[in-house]
Image (cartoon, rainbow, N blue to C red; front, side):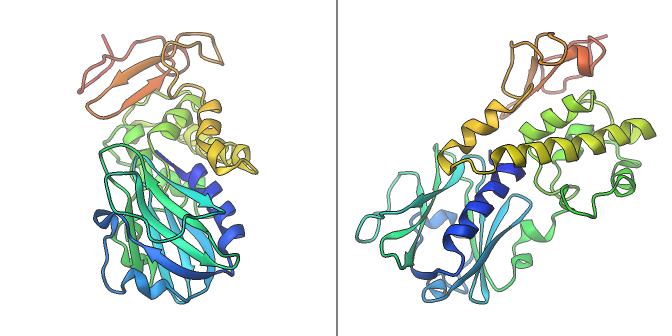
Amino acid sequence: MPELPEVEALVRFLDEEVGGRTVERVYPVAVSALKTYEPAVGALEGRVVDGVGRRGKFLVFGVGGLALVVHLGRAGWVRWNGRMPEGPPRPGKGPLALRVRLVEPAGTGFDVTEAGSRKHVAVYVVADPVEVPGVARLGPDPLGEGFTLGAFAGMVRGERRRIKGVLRDQSVLAGIGNAYADEILHVARMSPFKVAGTLSDGEVARVHAAVGATLTDAVERSRGVGLRELKAEKRSGMRVHGRTGEACPVCGDTVREVSFSDESMQYCPTCQTGGKILADRRMSRLLK
């Protein structure tokens, strides 16, 4: 799933490529991905792209007073195309969800695609990004100036959920998903099952510092990496996520996994749980 660092890299690339360019045609290939109907996607045609930004994991294209907002879901991506096929794309069961063709040079533009059969990509055309429900509920950006230690301490105070669930809650912090939550907690030497409201002042400070360091490092690693290589770059920088059975790069212990119905989490017992192995079942808790 694309998370904050990958979306930030997409923003930087697309802003350079499409900023100041005029939209020629917009093709909503997967109708299920289109979540708004007024204004119509055709209203973007003939307007100039003012710039590309990010709200959490949402891509926001400012287009002549309107906003094209895209959420990439679990397996979505944006593919730049310097030589687009002539003619409109054919709707079907393929990965293409949206195509945007630009004016000058002719034949350039980008595709929003989504792999797999479970479709979660969402596309909105609105006057203001906050009209998108998912954007309106976003918490502060963890790389923004407002994410101070005091602000984070206020977020977890009295929180009864596990710390990993809090980090992934987009209404608490915008942009962190399953993978980077695993990485943050490994850097912070914190069990993913620790109840957030029970963290000591020192533990709160460790997690807060780990959020900034982990995300900043991932963004910097992505700088200058081509869109086709970003996903591989993301995995190469992971310490524990997606590395079940491998050696922890810090202590050498074996990275373990707890699986759920539709996702999994990875962690190092020595670094994060005092050597204890987490029970691998949906209502997992530390083995006694």
